[in-house]
Image 1 (cartoon, rainbow, N blue to C red):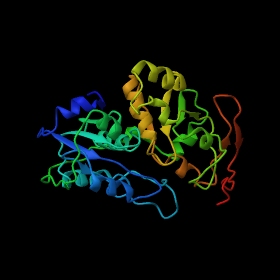
Image 2: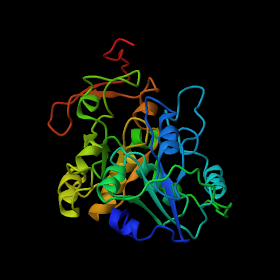
Image 3: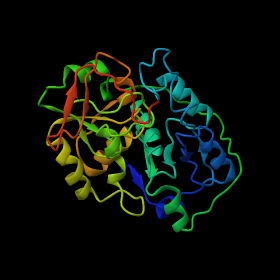
Length: 299
């Protein structure tokens, strides 16, 4: 299944009994913003899945696992079922952030075995340009049946990343903004920098000026150039926008990467893990073994 759907194509599917639309809007700085946006207006028939409540599992007390650990597969399947999303439904997720959060929905559903899932290419902005209708009715679909069949092979943890730092068959690809990757600033996590040897491909670089995904050939140039035939591991700050890289690789026709779900927020919580600054691809990387530094805003 094509992982993207254009607004015009979705317009023609509204009211389809086989379809479930998921509003995945979120704001990392305001956990309630996505729900408020949904209540103001959303695509007709859409249900809201909240990043913090529905798409993230409980935080570990010691900080391990990162800021957005994956939900328990069975709990996530039960949440889908309660929202009226069954195993036989086709799901379309959207947001207003270039797919940054909708891609999390896409990745999680496929992880538990639900393959019929796409994201709305261009999100809310593209829907508005296409003249798509909006609604403010709170949607409650009848409960459905959904089981979880998680693909454990789609994931890596910090220990596996650490073991394979010098493995020439593996490439870690980091989706964060360049200044965070290089360790010049870190507004969220307590340590600035990146996993040694990781290459940087900010997730937003996979989009055009209208917030839609670049053509497959352009994505292959951009992301295939980073992986260069290696097995890819994707990461970001906390495992959310890393799913966007995985989606872009799927659109490009590249081999699907594995996800380091804990990502930088997990890696930097472990004092024994080395921290790199600079740019590995440009040859300016500097590595400090197990070094923790105060983040650049002084916090």
